[in-house]
Length: 152
Image 1: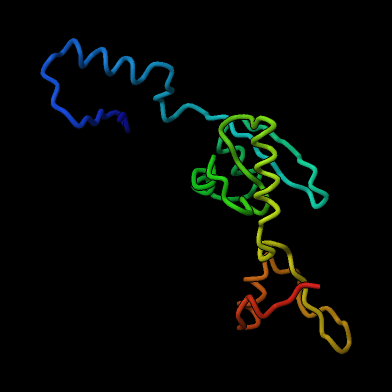
Image 2 (image 1 turned 90 degrees about the horizontal axis):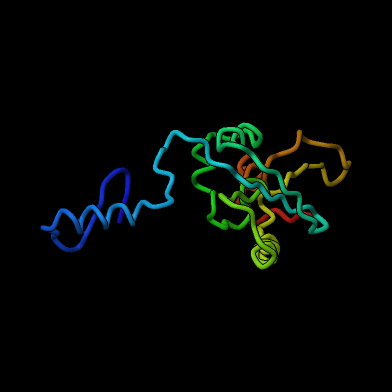
C-alpha cells in the first residue's frame, strides 16, 4: 500500500528491479501531490427530490461555499454520509445515474434533525427565537432531549 510517500508491503523485497517496478505500477495515474487542487462535485437534494449539482475547482472553494472548515470537506468527501453537510453531498468525481439513484435513497433516510427549526409559543403563536440550525440546537437551547421535539 502506498500512503504519504511510503510503500507498505507484507513481504521483504530484496530485488531492487522488482521493487522499482512495483512502485511505478502502484503510483501510475495517481496524483501524489497533496498541494494540487482537487475538484469537488456537490449534490444538493431539494425538498421535491430534484438535484442541484455544483462543481468546484478545489476543496477550499467548496468549504468556502458551504461556510465550513476544509476538514469538513475531507470528512464528507465520497463518504455517502446520511444528511451530508446540511443536505450537501460531496464527491471527488461526477456521479453516474445509478449512484444518483443511491444518493436519492440515502437522502430520504436523512434525519430531520438537520432542518432549520423555529419555536413559537403554543398559546399565542408568538415567535420565541430566531431559527435554530437544527433540532439538536433547539433541544440544547430548551435543555430537552432532541427526540422530544416534534416538528409540525
